Image (cartoon, rainbow, N blue to C red; front, top):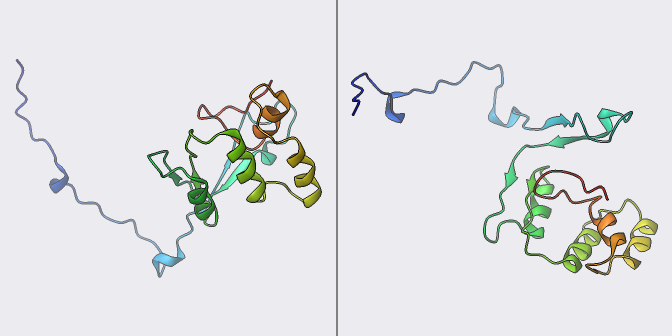
Length: 142
């Protein structure tokens, strides 16, 4: 057995000093960040069109945390939510329509007709994956 006798640091031994700043108040801090996804959109697409701007805080998928209500509340502050995997397709369709995913009324009404959940429907899968990223982070491409 090897015993190490040199000094080890613990949390009580470390002092965190804030960096000097010219901000006069904590409310002056801007948490919003902009991310551009290098490989999104495919070859020849504008990389600026495939980005995200918001506060990089994610409500994790713990028991009763990843709900649509949580996502709606955090979205007001540009934060993200990992939705629970236990919702079925009808709930997804209803919530996406209700939260204004569609850009205009005509688009929403046109999509509502084809949104009844059917496990064998490729049409439904194509539409839902325009708005949902699977947990592996890859856009569905049939």
